[in-house]
Image 1 (cartoon, helix red, strand yellow):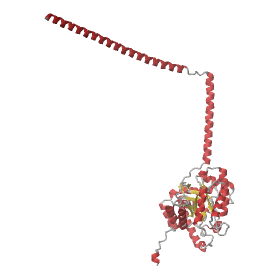
Image 2 (cartoon, rainbow, N blue to C red; image 1 turned 90 degrees about the vertical axis):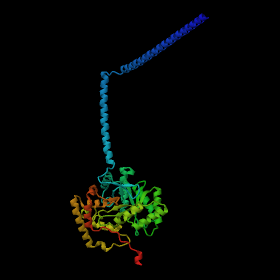
Image 3 (cartoon, one colour; image 1 turned 30 degrees about the vertical axis):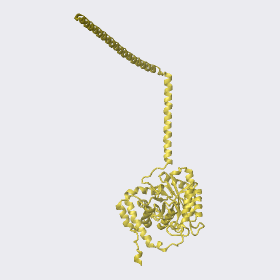
Image 4 (cartoon, helix red, strand yellow; image 1 turned 180 degrees about the vertical axis):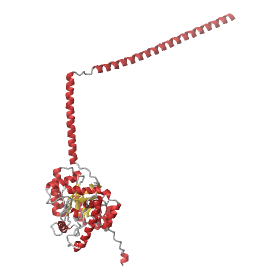
Length: 457
């Protein structure tokens, strides 16, 4: 029994050893197959990479081989083509330079000291210098001189042309300026035109009626040969016409597209305020500017009341006559004579109402003598600053920040450029120079004291 058990145990151990050996052999074979498979895959990837490299290299060689080889005939053709190309480029460069010069001549260029400001609190921006009709549009000036002055002003950067001189001369000025603008063919957005509605008690066009306002504007548009007028000014207030009629007539013109903006001329601050109030009550377009006389001898309205109107109701200021209607001696030859100025002032009434006769106080010799003494002292300051009396007066007027635009007139281009150079004098008018001018003028306006109604009772 013991022997049988020993033999059985030995047989069992032999079977287990044999199974372990077979298992080890199978594991070794599987491991060898895996190693061979890995080696085969690595070899395949290397061969594939080499194949791609060879393909790319062959493609590059083919592309290189396909490049054309220039012959002598081709090189000759290439040289002639290059010469033609250079000639074309030179011709294009010359044409471009000519076009640039012509466009520069046609387009306005900014003058030193020229600034663009909004009129009142509107969005219309104009140059601080405008070309006026005081001496420009005149029967004694031929069309060539007029064309030269208008062109010089436009090329200098001035984009405002004023036609508000008188009822008869303004019609002639509108016709002349309309012909010039049509001949020049400038862009309509590059300039603004101002005209005025005139009325007199002694003429057929009496008062500011709706009929007169609308007919006057339509006639001006026809004479100017334009689609619309930028700004229309109402000459003087009419006490015989209701403000509501005037306001509705101007609002009708704005809504019809005949005018863009409107304003007043030679109105008192009280009348301007009442007009603005009526516009607000009727929900109509409001005036944007007041045109007033302003120079060294006339300062009260502009320096006291106009800043208040601008801050409260947004009415701007356009000044005219910076040279006191040509009464300055140095400007006597370039403008009309002094006698013609007096006749013009009495006929069109720059400083007086047509209904009132001229007072004798304005012609006193003492006043004229004092004016000559003041102008002589100011001319000495102008000599010290290296400018003329005309340029000093223009610079002094523009020194006031309330003046958004100043109207200048000239009969020739020489007079125009001489007056325009007054802009370059503004930096020289420092506080010391202005104080010296104030001491010589001695006419700084002062607001009158408030009068208490309780104290008068």
